Picture: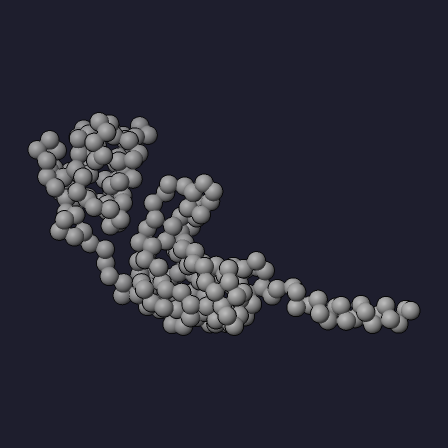
Length: 214
């Protein structure tokens, strides 16, 4: 009886081992650099037939910006993804998601890793290079207005162009750190007051996410 029990438990262990999924591990990515839109092959082990989530994370930003791409792997050894055009703040994937803006993927180093129900893989670096610069199209060029001294809505410091410094000035005005002598130039959404939404719109215009035609 004891011998039969031992034999049964031995057989059970042999067949039970495959039931425990292996955590993913990345051996290599190819290519290791390229512009936005490049198809990248991840080679490794432990990938699932479906439900693998590829993380493409900015390695240099103090605030976490990333893209999450769901992919399948018929053989459990390879995953494919295209380098995304934009990355999102980590809170974008929370429930409910935050309203923080995404940012365009620019040249630089990004971290690639895979998450499955069995665990998280090691990281590999991918270098984005030779991506086209984000510049306003002719339709998105700033327009002039006689009520704004600089002639450009969003140009809070009146230097003749819209930069991230303008967004900072508007944000500081909203929280009461500084005053602003030209509120019409900063009220880009036409609400009648200068608030944090104006700062957000100016910042999005500067990085090319929206038109600067306020």
